Image (cartoon, rainbow, N blue to C red; front, side, top):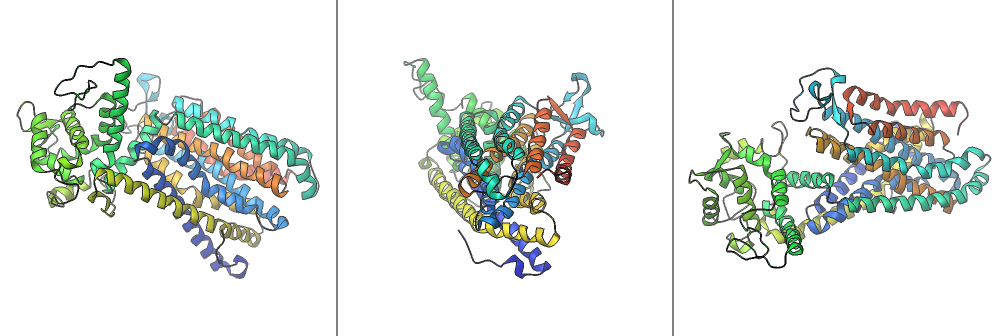
Length: 559
């Protein structure tokens, strides 16, 4: 897809800088659209497994992959030159993700090492008390270990193309002819690893890491007020109810019915352990925020403010009846577990039981209370509240789910279209910068391309790491490993295809060695049980050191 663009060769230095900033901003915006659209689909239970396992990894690699694809298109001789822009994007993206955001995640998520527990990270008391970088750090869980193994396994295609490249020399036609069959083999292996990686992600779509990601997305969506409480959770809770029913039915086919059960032995007023865990993960911070006096209980007024602020217009009689059901001692308050159970009952009630799905209730129960709570609920006190349209909250939970799907796919389509339109102009700008600076295009692309294409991954990793728990640091680091695996499979397959189908030559031995070496070192680090903050700074240094390594290898004659 092409659009009328300004030829970078026809503008001056300031014009070139403006084009770089403009295209970079547009690609960054498109990348965020794709990321946010994918996250929205996580709110749809029927799609969550597919989205978490296939859509998120694939679309996350689209911005990088598109730059790489366009770098090898056009006139064959020019494409051979601009191909180094794509290789720079591949190397820069892979190495940057494994170094800069990794190190920043370690810094953001660091906790004290417990001297009384073999210097293991102390997540029971996440507040830092030690200033030494060698005495603080993060845990590297089994999931991080396994993610590094997958990442290292997917580097195999580099060896398939690089081994013949070491022994071939001559012009483009000669080298390309010698590499063609190897490129075909590499292409098949890349695609095979790509499918295998997606398959493993789908199989793990219900594991802790994927659940943490979904919970974070739901919390963020509720914080913004983009959907109501039931709009975000009703379908998910019902899905878990059905799963629990099937599990119980497989154990016994004759469950005694009672007034409080649904025929499958499930108490209407009490969530299952899995549903309770989900609701606590999402609403735990909300309970603490709305417990204004901090006594560990919510009174009826606080509970009603919570429902109003979460865009639930359930009628007063229903709220009073549910509250009375769980206020077992008649004290006028409910504790945390009772709050979760009450939310469960309200979430699972049909739209017809609440007096209508719309926002006919007062917009806010108390302006003063809301101003205080908006700074506390689901976010840090110093984080600004984002103003978002509330059109979805006026719909029923079922309609909200359908609207979420429409909005998500719109964002994905628009984001992908923008990437396709502006990747080619970005490649031309990076090439022109290299020409004017009299340096190889690889170095320009290595530094600049990841800024535009990988901003969403960097931001997401910092968000999770800052929560300072063993689970959230695992989410942050495994996402970075997953992005590297996608570069090793999906993105590298594009180069293999360009070499085989277009007759281009792979003459990037120094760059390949840097990519593989950084991944090898990170694999070794990731097999440990923890990483100190000091080691995190060492990891950070790998990014500039890899550029120096490529320059030294090329200086000594390696292509």
